[in-house]
Length: 250
Length: 390
Image 1 (tube, rainbow over the protein chains, first blue to last red):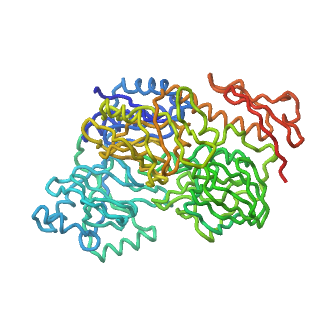
Image 2 (image 1 turned 60 degrees about the horizontal axis):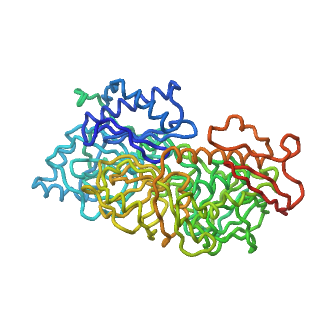
Image 3 (image 1 turned 60 degrees about the vertical axis):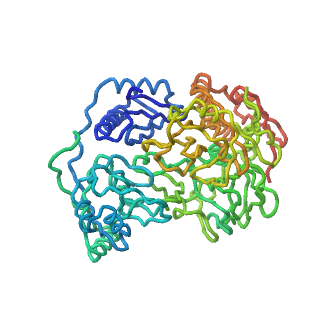
């Protein structure tokens, strides 16, 4: 198959597919295309697209056939694809997320440590030392699929998923790490929990994170976790940010 | 003033057309599952067609009215009654303060829609009033309705005009639509008239991952009967039947999921994705059911049979656009507006509604009860019989 290509996804959606692997390069191309498309829409040159959803390898476009039909949309899309677009530079902002590791907050920390025959504190050190790129959001509101975790702490999912994982839980699934934004079932290995709300329906920006951002975790003890939690509940906590030094991938 | 929920029923939620624009943040769309019945309910009571309604599943709620209103019940026949007397479906029904709307046996379909003239006072979350139970947001406190809940009307006392006209043509109702034997398709809803298990044939567009299946797998998919299991909720509908063969396996790199997409995981059995689906998923999608056929899936029940038949994008979108035109035509008809969109109707879409005296200023409907009105929808002529409503 040659990429990019357009795939039918029913009569009101298409998927523009850019490859078949998880890589920052493909991710960057999808972002560039999504931005170019958004610009076309903003300029009024394409009508009828009401939503786009970027994922690892493709961009799904949801559209209204009563405004634009399939063939017309494909022509517009191909026109954009024919011109090479530079993605905007990734945001250099890194958001710092506090995490209370282990204990009741991270019931699988000891398992992850023993799986790799290391001390739990070493898992925490490694997990807090990287800046993670958010490739995409999906699954549940605000669930971020992050890449860039050190392979030395990569751990397979649980064989039987948990029925209920509390919101804020930080987990590992294979080489990915992420945060559960709402109480939900799930099979990731839980190593800690953040008091920060990834998702709050009544906040101006309901979803805290976005694709293309970077995240870095820092370790807090239970007392600090509770202090931050009370600030979060009062709407008075803001995550610290800093500027990333080197761009990765582009 | 508004409604009081005496009994919540099995799964009664506030729904509208869904939450658009937030899937890129992992936020599901939600919204009514049977989209046609949902829009018809609103149109019948004179609302914008995207107004919030109640969606009841299998066992409907009991609702006491705190003030006079006009309602319409559409979708599956869950035996609605008003103060113990059968409540007619697919038409505007005036109700008085103190009246109780309740439901009984599930006859045909499984999801009913209740629209209230003037709408319900529900705070929109991210632009939508739809309940997304899994995330606990939208609708009424982000949950299904339970005994004792009260919801106010958004515009209390709103009265649609031409109440006696507000009856949906038989041909557009779920039972009739499901009973239509589509050209070249056999066995569609063969038992539409009774309440036994049904067979529905729905049209699909192959893709986006049909290349992940073998020729034999695609043959199996398009030539087999699949039974609806009891794993069937607002998120998805799991089917059982002949296993669909993958080239390697059913896993893909997580990508987007559209309404009506058919996932086939390693088990080889299809899962149809519905309103509360997750925004992205990691199973190969063999095909998608076209939107105009989705109400059949929304109303299918455990034990019903589903067959898939291939169609093409032009047919699917012609019918999709025609359905939207149909909504506008019904709104014009019920509101007594003269047909004004005829000149701008999309090519291949609908003929204008042809009222017998539409040139005149009088509404094109006989004023006497029992009169008939000729309507043309999609080139087909329909008679609407007017019934007097007390």
